[in-house]
Length: 342
Image 1 (cartoon, helix red, strand yellow):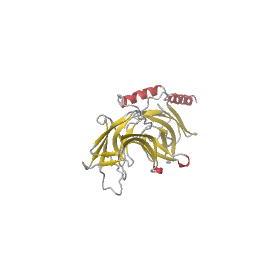
Image 2 (cartoon, rainbow, N blue to C red):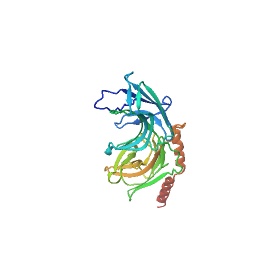
Image 3 (spheres, rainbow, N blue to C red):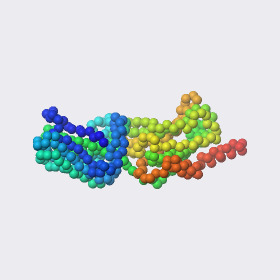
Image 4 (cartoon, rainbow, N blue to C red):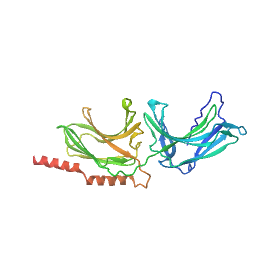
């Protein structure tokens, strides 16, 4: 884990007289998670959850042994903050804890200080977006008259959810009068990040020449309030349903595996600063390049690591359940029966 030292240099100093290192007590065994930084690079950071204790050591190493280091106190902070990119430098702290490690005095030799923040509340998931960043970090500081010496260590927080109690299927119709009538169903409205979206599309009436059809997963990040609201739409996934013209009475199965895509849980009004929502976007393109859309919000959530059955097994169970309760198939049968009567 590469940690950057962020020393606050003074005009008068020629380098630092001490180095700070922060080490978590369970660094050997604690899991790490990949997280994207602002410049788009991915790094691995220690992974923590809400309510977990954060404890470790702050090692202060004097660069010139035998030379004393005067200080106005040594402290460590645990901070959770949100930064909106259009309001740079203005950090909104929603968690700010501090522990004093040493009172003002002097260090005559390198020293190690223990720290512990018990059952720390970490209410939101770490997030690096288009216009906003939510980060958690530990910062150790040696306060000095002219130039503080400090070191930051970023950590990543994941929020876990339990299975939603209500998870109804999504049923929608797309209709253009006398030209097109499509019904589509998805098995659920809430999906965990490694889930499979299982669905079906039924063509009840097709008089348009449809050339191409796809489902997109669209992520929408909303930041700010009032007049300063910014929306960023990002197409995370494109899933081609069909290429070529569908026939009346045709039904097309959908099976979209989410595990392959980079997504976060749905985030609603985080600290009244931003939201991240996800939508399934059904796109139809006709031969004259006209596009028809139907959008439906889905909720994404993160579940804890449990022993998982294989993805294909999950998908098979989901589609069995789904096909067992399909009202659109009945609608299709009724439409065909009516046609035969005429």
